[in-house]
Length: 286
Image (cartoon, rainbow, N blue to C red; front, top):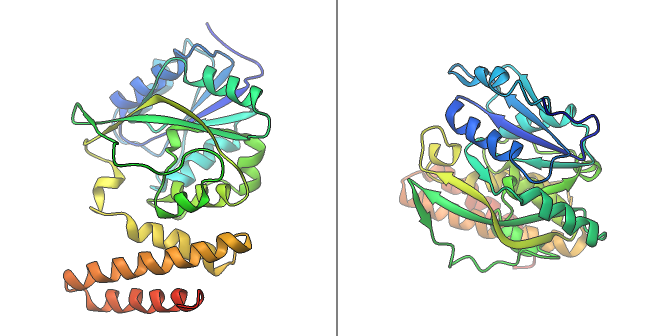
C-alpha cells in the first residue's frame, strides 16, 4: 500500500456521474513521477457507478473519497475538497481531463526555482471526440502580469494549475454560486495582484465533446463571465488601473451580449445589457 503522512500537494478532483472518465483521471494522478501527494475525490452526489471509486483505489492510501449532497456548482465542490486538504500546494483536475506523468514534478521544480511566484500553470492539449483541436488562434499572454488578457476570457485551465494553498484560501477560493465561469472569476481576483508562472509545455489533455459537460449545456458561456465580472466591478475589487480595465471590458461584453440577444429576439434581456453597457462605459468616460 502507498501512503504519505505529510503530502506536499493536495489534488482535488470534483466528479459527478463520470465513473470511467474519473477513474482515468485519478490514475493519471497516482501515476505521477512526483509522489508526495494526496488525492481528494469529491463526489457531488453521483447516481451512477462513481461511488465505486471509493473502493477502486483503496490500495493507495493517498486517495481519499468524499461524497457530498448534489450541489451542481463546480466551485462549491472544489472548495469542499480544499477544506480537508493538507498540502502546501493545491492542484485541481477536472474528472474528464488527464495529466502527463511529470506534470506535478515540473511545476514543483518551477516554484522552487522561482520563489516570487505562488502559482504556475501549463499549456494544454485539447481533444474533442478523439481529435486534437488547434489552438493556433490563441495569442494571449500567459506569463507574468496577465490580468488584461484574463479579462477577455479564461486563459488558465483549472486542471493546469499548481497554487499555494495559503494564497487560494486568502482569495476565498472559487465562487460557489456560478455554474460556469467560476474559474474565469477566480483568476481575475488572483491576477489582479499576483504574477503567474507558466510552463510552455502541454501537461494536460483536456477532453471535450462528451455528455455532461457544463460548457455544452448552454451553448455559450459569456453571460456567466458577465455575472462574475460584474460583481467584482461593482465591489470595486480591483486595483485602480485594473478596475478601469475591468469596467471597460464589462461594458464591451454587455454590448456584444446585448447584440446577440437582439438577434435572438430577446428584447428585454437585450435592453438590460445595453443599459449595463452604457453604465460601465460612462464610468470610463465614453
